[in-house]
Image (tube, rainbow, N blue to C red; front, side, top):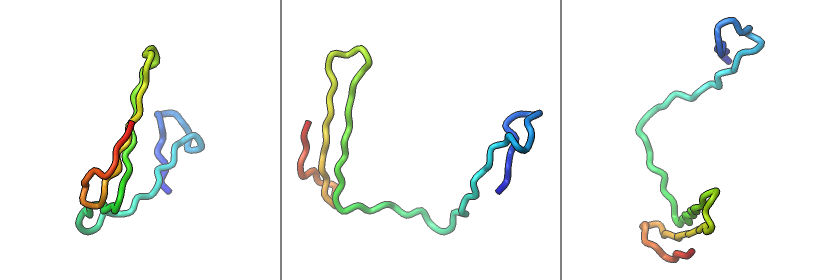
Length: 68
């Protein structure tokens, strides 16, 4: 594993290791999911209200159910 110094003057003992990376080979492939549930929320530190919502999509991307 290769080590790279964070700043000049910092010893090898204080350096951050760089993890090995696998080479990228071939074409990029898309991820295929059968069913997926997406969830999102919204709030602020000073707001009186917050919210959450979700949606279930099938393998064709069609919305099956959604709620808040």
